[in-house]
Length: 417
Image (cartoon, helix red, strand yellow):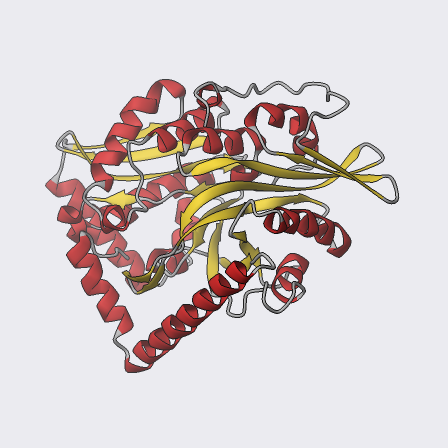
């Protein structure tokens, strides 16, 4: 990555599109269509207006957030954006990036296989615009062309709803040796925001409400005058938020797994861009002047996407993670620009307990039509079957949940309810 790419700041103003579009590849198709492929940050600006016109639904797929992620993450080699036009008008887009990845296969929190690959990754929500079967097949064919050209070891389409045309086509239509044969799915939980946090709590059982109230009273009593909640959203808050969140994250099991928020250039860059655009919201709970818990995320297209939260396990008995989450929900209920909270994919207890609707999603691999691609596919398939079998046996024996709880405690923090 060039040094000048890391300093690019994408403006908020909408500009007139530039014609002809400078691109690394342009492929003319019948019916007035063409596919435009952009492989460098400095050329994203040329397709930026068309990208916005297609109305991304997820902040990760916004061109400014996407560019900031590419520029700030050392694992990402470059962008790979495919735009489909008809008669000069944008029709569909795939926001992908070429990146170095570790494909971790875990049983619980224990990694059993972790090959290193160059992945061409379509980000979550990165299929933008008209994604009906015809349009998606054109985008997929162009993405697979990069595999045939040897640019990547595999194509990864992240978190596709299992009932979508994209999932069905990508998982069944590539040739046998190039398609994935076991897709691991997960549940994405979202909370449809009611009018107030009190209304939200009324959906919980009386016993659960009593537990929440008892913990809150104990926390506020034991730390009377020594408890503070700060909300962060502006660029001038960047250093304070990152410092506080990183201090809490360092004490969590997510930090040991390498998925926690940290004071890194990548996290700082994404947070800064989100703050500059008015998307970012963060909350930190301080006890005795020290950060003890945090939640954060981005407000985009009437959805609030939460990042990985964290809390100091020393205060687990107080339920400080849930306590702060309810303050976050209270604020978001009052925000007319937010209709739902996206907790992300995963089996954490709080996602199910504090979610009101769910979608089953799966990430799909497509491999190049080469011997190396077939070998990688076979290796990943064998390991995936073995891991799935081990999980099934552990689930039947009733030991997986207990084992994950023990791993969490060993790594740094139990889950809160």
